[in-house]
Amino acid sequence: MRLYHGAGGLFENVDFHRAVLNWLNIRGATFRDVSLRGVFALETDFAGARFERCGFFCANLNRANFTDAVLDDCFLVGALMNGADPRGAKLSNCDLNGIRGGATPDTPVLIKLAGSIYDEKTEWPGDFDPEPFGAINGTKRIWQGPPG
Image (tube, rainbow, N blue to C red):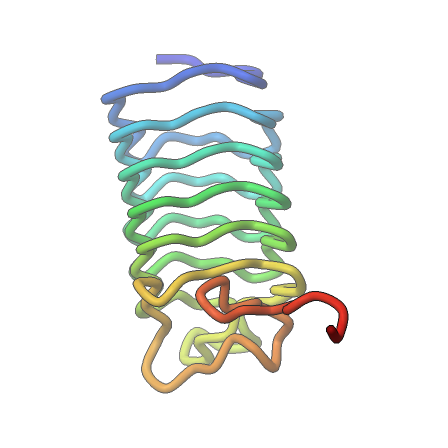
């Protein structure tokens, strides 16, 4: 299967296992029940994309753009995310244990989390606290309105 630019496309029940998606524009695409296990997606533009029940096990997502993407019930265990940009992304019921995105493979830190929204079902590596890195817990009431 060859995928050049899938901006706005719909991908359902597709196995992209070890596919090379480097530098593609896949903005706004929808991925449902898709295996992205071991995929190479260096600097791929997933901005505004929606991922439902997708597996990114050991995927190379270095410098990928996930700005404003929606990841629902996704499995990112062991994914490489050095320099990935998930600002404004919504992470719901995602397993992020073992993600790597820091200076060393043993540093489980996502870079540029500012504005990313996650829920109580999102699993982070070990005792990692995403809030100091700018992620927002969407299950907390963030703004209660003007004083009344």
